[in-house]
Length: 508
Image (cartoon, one colour):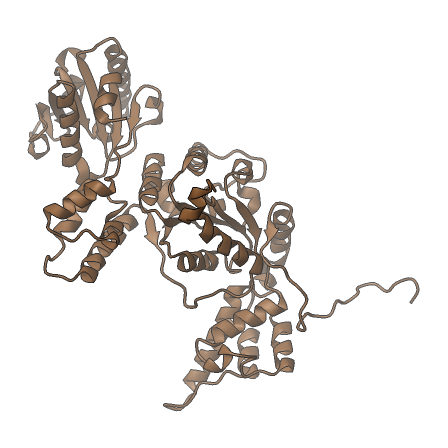
C-alpha cells in the first residue's frame, strides 16, 4: 500500500529511518501529503514550533526542549494536514524520567483524539526504536527500497551504463544511499571499476547495519559431507527458470548443527561459491543492540539483494536459555520476526543457519517449513579426514593434489588414527602448522614437502576440542541426531579404525 493511502486510512504512523535518509523521507511524506490534498509541517528537537518540511532540518533555535515537546503534543496547536515529528521519542529519552512519563501519556492521548479527526494526520520519523507500548496505537510503515526500474532511472540521470552487475551492486540500498553511491563514481571509469566502487560503498553500508558479505574460502571444495553436498546440487536446480515453470518452490535453506569447527560456516561459503550467490552474514550483536525494527530492515535489504544467501551463524546465541524455558522479550520479538520472514519470504533468498546447541533453539524454528533440510555435521570419518587433510596439504604441497600425495597407505592409516575426533578446522590447522614448520627451516628456493612426521608433530602439539570438552559434545550429538539427518554417509573405507570390544562374550 502506498504512503498516501496509509495517510488516508491511518491517523498516526511511524517510519523508522537511518540518519542520512531524514531529508529524503520528509520529501516523500510531503509528496504523499500533497497527493491527498494536505499540507506538511515538521517539528524537530532543534527547532522550536512547526516549520515547512523543506527547511525544518536546517533550523537551529535555542529554547526549552521540554516546553517545546509539551506544546507540540497539544491537539489545538497541531497544524492542519500532516504533522511530522522527527526523533521525538529520541528527544524524550534524553529528558528526566518524570517528564518522559508525562510525554508518553500525552502522545497516547493525542493519538486517541486523532481517531475522531479527519483534519489531522501525524507521522513519527525515528532513527531509533519506538517504544513497544505504541505498537497497537501507531501504525508502523516501512518505506520500500527502490526497485530496479527506479535504480535504472537514477543511473540514466548520472549517464552511467545500465548493466546487470551495476544494478546488483546497488540493490539493497535506500534511495538516498543509491544517490550517494552514484556521486562517488568517476564517470570516466570502465564498467568493472564502477562496479568495484559501488560494491565497496555497499559493503560499508551493510556492515554499518550489521550485515557482512563473507569472503570466499581458501579451497574450492569441502572434504566429506557427501549427503549434504548432494542436496546442494539439487538446490541449484530449484532456483532455475525451469523449476518456476513446474511451480516447484524455492528451497528454503539448510539448518546445520554440530560442534564448533566441523565445517558449518565453511559449507555456507561453499554454497555461495557453487551457486554464485553472495553470502550475507546477519550479525547477532547488531540484531540485539539495534532492536527489532533494524532487524526487519536487515532482512528487507537481504531480500532486495536476491539471489543471495542469508547466513545466520550460531543461531542458538540468539536465544540464550535452557531447555523448556521461554526467552526474554527481545528474544521473543526476534523469534517472531524470523518466523514470519522464513514463512512469507518470496525472494530468491536461500537461508542457512548453524547451531552448536540445539537445546537453545525454540521448537517453532525446527518444525517443517522453516528450513527444508536439517543436518548434523559430525566429526569426520577416516575417509573424510584423509580428504580434508589432502585438500589443505595441497595448498602448500602440490603432490597432494592427486593420489595419496607423499604418504603411503600405511602412513595415512597412522595419521588418521591420531586425528580421530578432530574437526575439519583442526585438520586444516594441522596441515597449516606442518607447512609453516617446514617453511621456517627451508632453504631459499627449496621445495616444500609435507611428510608424515610433520603432520604427526603438528597433531601432537594440538589440544583438540574433543579432548577439552568431550562430554558436552557427546550430549550435543545425542540430542541433534534425533532431529537432524546425517551430513555424511560414512560408508566403510580401508582406513576405518578397528572396533574394539570392551567386554568379552560369555562364550570366550
